[in-house]
Image (cartoon, rainbow, N blue to C red; front, side, top):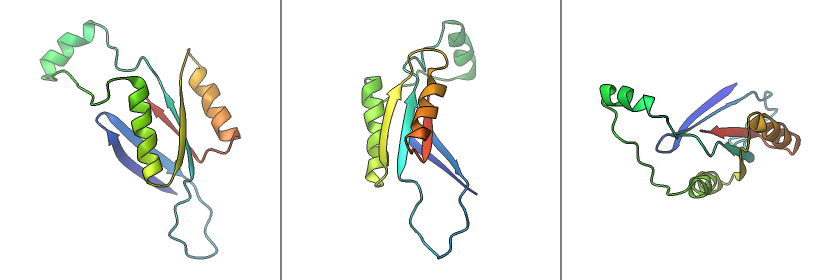
Length: 117
């Protein structure tokens, strides 16, 4: 069993847990070849009640280098592709949609599903 943590961009972390059978021969090639990214387009939109808590904790406004949700998705995909991992993604549209997308991704051969937001 292996676990991988990584920072993809400010505020976006990747955690992958994989269970792999014991190899019959020693290989250093990664088993992760295809990733599906699920993004909540409304993530980060906080209500006014959180502003006081953030002020009291000294948390300043969080700025992202990505101007749109599409740009963030493209940035995450490019990180995976720079490591020779095929990546694609979709935005959730309603409650429960992420579960549906994850099941479909696994059925289509995704080695990992990454949730953002």
